[in-house]
Length: 291
Length: 293
Image 1 (tube, rainbow over the protein chains, first blue to last red):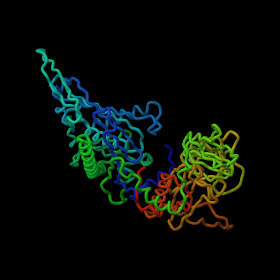
Image 2 (image 1 turned 135 degrees about the vertical axis):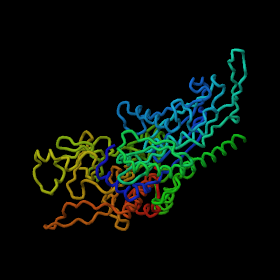
Image 3 (image 1 turned 30 degrees about the vertical axis):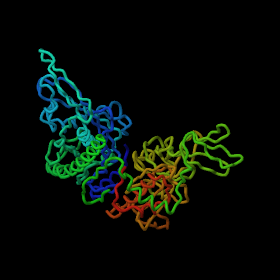
Image 4 (image 1 turned 90 degrees about the vertical axis):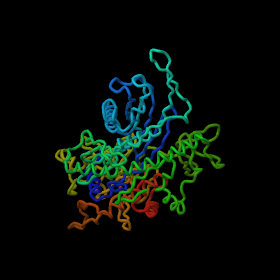
C-alpha cells in the first residue's frame, strides 16, 4: 500500500507520544473478538477478529498410523492459507508464500520438534494403540482479511479452536491374532475427550517503531515499523519461543531484552481474558447440549 | 473500550455482545437533533419504489418500470427531485462533479502530469500546468520543471485538489491552483462512503474550539489535522506559501483521534457528514475511545 512520507512521519510521532491514530496507546490491542464452534463439520473451530483482521481456524481429528519415531504419540498438522481477497494485494504466488511463512511461525509456536513431540500439547494423549493408530489433529487456518497482526490473531484462534475440539471416544477391540485392533468410535457428541490447552502459548508480535515498542500494529502502522519479534508466551508469562519476523530490520541485543519483557507482561493478560471467555462459552455450550 | 495511555487488559468479546458501543453514544445524540435518512427511504433490489400517487413520475437512475410500477434495480436510498425518482446506491464509487473539493493520493508521476487516485471509477489526472509551482511565480512550465515534478508531489503523497474538468470518456482533471490546495501533512486520513459527504459551500472546515482542521473531500476521503497556524502575509500583502507545520502535540493528536473516531462513527451509522454533525459527533464521543475497526 502506498503511504506518503508525511503520513509515516505522523504515525511515527504518534508512537513517540504514546497515542496512536485510533486512540490506542503503544501497548494496547484493538478489541479482540473470539467466536467458538463456527464450523459444524470440524472437530473444533474458532474465528478471531482483531480490529480489521479476521481469521478462521478449524481442527479436524483423523485416525492415522503414528510415525516410527514416536509410536506412542499422536500428531498435529498445520496449514495456513491466505485468502486472495484478504486485502493484501500480493503479486504472483505471494499469498502462498505468506501462507507457508505463517504456517512455519505457527508451527514454531505450537510444536517444539519436527515430529511434534514435546510441544505445548500432550501428544501421548492422542495415542489410541501404540504403534498402530493415533489421532492426528489437522489444524487448518484461513486468513479472511488482513489488517496487521495476522500471526497473533492466528495463534489466538488456534488456541481457541483446540480448546473447542472434541475428540470422539474410542473403544479398542482385539479382533484377530494378527494384532490388528478394531476401533469403534463413540458417535455421541456429549461423550468426547477434550484437549488440555492450558499450556498452549499465544504469539505476541512486538514491533519497534522508532524508539517505541508496540503491539498489534495495523497494516498502515506495520508499513513504518522497524524490527519485529514474534514471541510465544504462555499463561504464566514463560517464554516458549521467539523469532525475528522475516524481512525484519536488524535488532540491537538491548532492545531484544526489552521486547521479550514486554511480550511476557502483555501475553498472560491476553491469555487470561481468552481463557475466561473460552471457559464461559464452553460452559454455555455444555448447558445447551444437556438441554 | 479502553483508554489510551495506561495499558489495560485487552478486551476480548465473544461475538454478539455490544460491539458498536462507540457508535451508540453518537447515535443517541445525533438522532435527537437531525433527521437521519428515514427507514422507508431505503429500498432493496426488486422493491417497489412508492411514487406517492404522482401522475407522471420520471424514471431516474437505479430504477426500472415493471408492470407500470417503479422498481429499484439497486440497493440504496430513494431520492426525489420534483417528478424525478431515482435510487442512489449505498456503496458506489465517487462520481466527480465540476468544482468538487477532493482529497486524493498520487499513485504515479507521468509525462507532464500526476495520476491521482480518488476512489472513483477511473484515476484522475493533475496536469503540471494546473499546479502552483513553489515560489508562486506564474511562468511557462519548462522541461526542467518536468524533471523536477517529484519535488512537488511524489508517489504516495496525499493532496487536496479541486475538480477542474470532466471529460467525455469519464476521466477527471484536477487543479491545485490555490494556496489552500496542495500536499497534506501532519494529520490523518479517514475514508468514508462518498455518498455521505454533502456538497457544500465550504469543504475546508476549521474548528478552533476543537483545534482541528477537517477537509471533507467529496470523494469520501477526509483529512483531519491539527489547526494550522494562520498564513503569514508576505511583503505585498499576499499570503505566502505556508511554512512546514510543527509536529503535533499530544493534546492536538488526541483531538485529531477523537475527530477521526467521530467520522468513523458517523460512517458506521450512515449519517450525512457536514460541519454540524461532525461537531455533535465529536462532542458525543468520549476522549480516548478506541473503535472496533
